Image: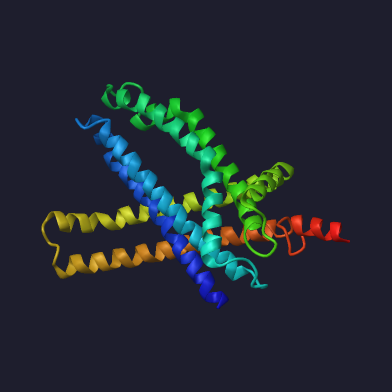
Length: 284
């Protein structure tokens, strides 16, 4: 049973933490300039932002389901609520923990909208286009990175307090999660940084590999050879490698979740902690 729960946990997380980032990178890498130069601007950007927001919410829900299944598989006492209850609690914690990063993203998007259109239409006099855009945006990117690390650390600590035996209310779990990070900032933020860098490296390598593998497929499709045996074999190989990368990304995120559980295991509330301990003391 535990093995099946672990498999279910990292399998659903894989689609969120590997495939979704690759899809976002592909969109902005290949259609970024077209968005700002299109006659539909800024409505096309707003539509894309709305779709991205919906995608993020769905991704958070799937991530919450995967995290709940994973944590239930790691628990040996069988305590806590149902999978549905744990998923709802984790989803709420994830949304609250992600609010600072969401604000940082909104600020970064506003700055990008103010800077990027002029750079796309400007003559190439100040270096590569990407460098000219990222230069003024560097402070906003650093602020976003800081909020992501802080949100991950607080969210990980709060999730493990909000589900399982002796769980706390969501507000209490978030409050204690913030206190935990403030008490041990180096270790908590260091683990968040390690996990984030590992996942970014995995996404970058997967994107590079998939882009190389897709080039011959794209050439055959452009030539109208969709149903040829060679093209079909290339497509089958591409999908098979993509699925292996997805499972690898899920396993990587599962490792990160297990690492958080190992680090925070002594901090999270136990069966006789918090409000329950207080009520027991009063009764005595």
